[in-house]
Image 1 (cartoon, one colour):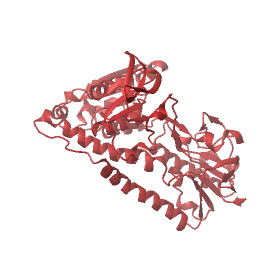
Image 2 (cartoon, one colour):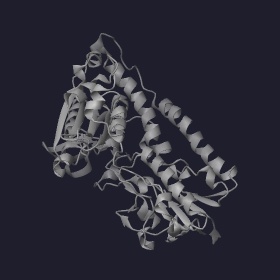
Image 3 (cartoon, one colour):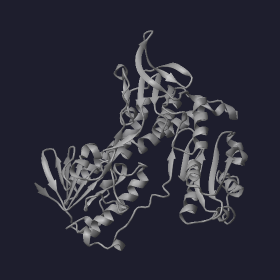
Image 4 (cartoon, helix red, strand yellow):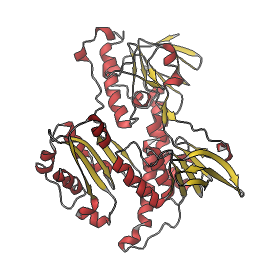
Length: 462
């Protein structure tokens, strides 16, 4: 058995080993490419593809503005080469750096399995350390559909590297992955059908956001809502997805299927529960210091949090590595004072969805506020009420704000429309630093006629 000061499982945010551990003996375990989901098959390649899709969508929509434009052709192989020609060398370089230029780090390739809470088996070898950091991420949630093997099908892990564009794509799911990738392929000329288990797209968002996005996607694509009894079959010589939706029985031709019904934390594949580490459906449970139920075992990222966001995983990595360093090589967690530990605060974690339209959100949804019985006021302001909205001929985008009726603090912010992921940033900061909606509205100048005027209008309305 090989002994180390620290074992890290996963090279996404878990690879952010700080300089203060440069003299520690670290075992770094990875079963796939270095860099984790975000770099290789998640937020970075998908956003590079979204940018291409946005360009194509803008060209197709240019006629509304008096500009004659069209998409003459789409060279999908060239698009894929551009995206992964940038990404793959970064992943390879990260592995080379850790394996060959960090003398204190030993890289182990293979699937990690916990034999004991602080003993990891990988590729027939056993590793042990006083402290273990689990950062093994998540994987696409499977979907059992009879006959699915009749048609080429993908998850978000594989579809971005398809060799060519299909004529028709059926997407199982209506969450953020489905929305983004459906936008990509639909904007590049693929006929996309979304098959949803529920009644709306992005059901986890505020209700008004879900309604706006569902309406927008319904104008561009076919939506089958409240779908059940799904199957893939041959009908009149073609492959179709069939079932029953809110409007009755349906069939949808499918050259390719994308299964995008969520992601499952990899704690079960690590065998965490079997060695006494508390889990919930594969998710490794931790306290706010990111320590698991076994002292000296830590977890971060998609393996433990429910939001599964890269910016959150990066913040958790800073917290976890600080606490690991504080415990020292001996992993003496019991002797640490509470003041020496850092904690993660997930109360105001923002997120964005880069579909068409874009969505950004932070804080509570209106249904959360209602369930909590909190006195509140809310407003929805249209982009179309601002000069920038006039320029865009925008009739659908909106900013929704929810504030406490008494304290005047902002409880939730939800934006649907162009640049939503940027427009929400001043609201995130205002909430974090405890500014009232009155201060945010009147003590800050908003440039006219910039996109942020929609935020100003919503704040003034409160």
